[in-house]
Length: 104
Image (cartoon, rainbow, N blue to C red; front, side):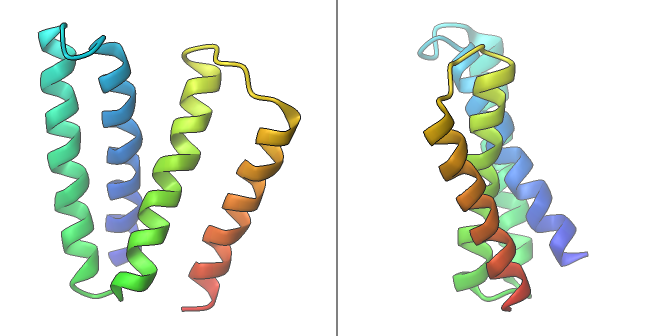
């Protein structure tokens, strides 16, 4: 259950970052509200996860999921160009997240 909470926290991170982009600098109220809701949910699940997981494990995985997800959302949803070099480093990030999980 704790890993699900951490994964949900990471998804919340991806959600709020996408909503922040759609809010156009917090000028669109509905997306601005969704940004704040996403932040609250992301922190809520992170707090729940850190009750059972070490911070040194939970926090980097949370930010890694958020980073990886935001890169993918930026690429696929917002048609942001991602070079082969950037994809290489995204894969390294994924390897690092998996490495942290298996080395717990």
